[in-house]
Amino acid sequence: MINLVDLQRQFQSIKNEVLKAIEHVYDSGQYILGPKVNELETKIAGKLGVTDAIAVGNGTDALVMVLDALDIGPGDEVITTPFTFFASAEAISRVGATPVFADVDPETFNIDPVKIDAVITGKTKAIIPVHLFGQPADMDEINELASNHGLYVIEDACQAFGATYKKKRVGSLADVACFSFFPTKNLGTIGDGGIITTSNHELALKLKKLRMHGSSKKYYHDTIGYNSRLDEIHAAILLVVLEKIDDWNERRRACAKIYREELNAVLGITSPAEAADRTHIYHLFCAQSKERDFYLNLLQSNQIQAGVYYPQCLHLQEVYKNLSYQEGDFPVAEQLSQTLFAIPMHPFLYKEEQEKIISILRTSSGGKKK
Ligand SMILES: *Cc1c(COP(=O)(O)O)cnc(C)c1O
Image 1 (cartoon, rainbow, N blue to C red):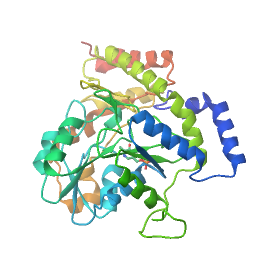
Image 2: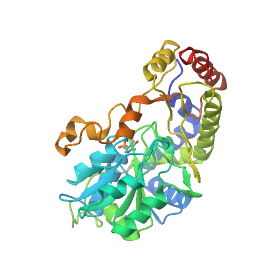
Image 3: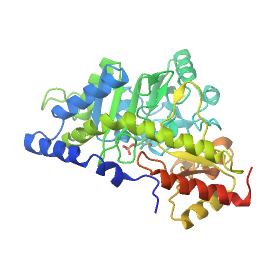
Image 4: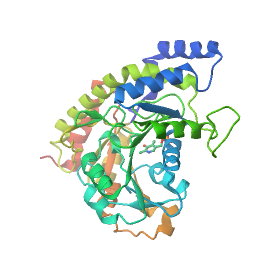
């Protein structure tokens, strides 16, 4: 079986360093928010070019705490994409605000600034663009809309650590950004974790307080907070992964380049587009076909794992019935939910494996070729 992602191979490649790092933490007696977490926060802030990084329990908590820290709640609206992992909208609902969706661009699958403009109201407080599958959203246009209307911009960068937009890294492109360290994310650990990045120091202090039960002085509380922190063990592992991430992202990009060139020849399959002035770091490689089921079956019957991201748009989720959206409201997102399919993409995909995948897609392609 050729897997979509291969975490075993990935973590096997750094096993010795990781086990040493774990042993070091084990012996240190400091297990939560210790020196390794500090070091990780400092290194990530430095790498992204922001003043602060706040490590938290996971990417979803990062989004929830950021919205909370910005005093966004009941009666407020937050605009995001209907074509993303559920957590992007769930966080908005979790703080009691209302998610408002805006359709995506058919080429990049990212939220379309023109569609955002159309749904801004007096209640809008923030925009959450998602750098979907590792490709940065149209940040200049989004930031301009936000500054014209006095809105916050929160990057959901959970899928895009290391991606760049006009030579700047995601995580430094707006008021604040959220990352996830879930194992399958480009920068992942062997458990849950997340981090918030910002150059707003006041906001950072608020977030540091929120993650620790609303306390900045032990046993004194001036706000209701959370218990959402990063374990020392995960920080130690992530420091090892952080050393590799640029190389691993480069490997993903090299792999994507081959897919894009080779699949270009297949009638009925469209490779993902790379927008100008940015580096896509291919958290996922999602190709498009009107005959998706055919390809999913073909790959599966050849022991190649494929996946569908995402089969159901957020505005059509059961839980959001109360928002009164309907099928047809976001035609681009809906179309993508019916045509995109992910093929194996990770830094440790062997050349022979990729050749096999390409050859199967090329020779079969519903019998057709360009
Ligand atoms: C993974 C992900 C999240 C949530 O991160 P967790 O660490 O799993 O909570 C949020 N948004 C997007 C776009 C994601 O891919």
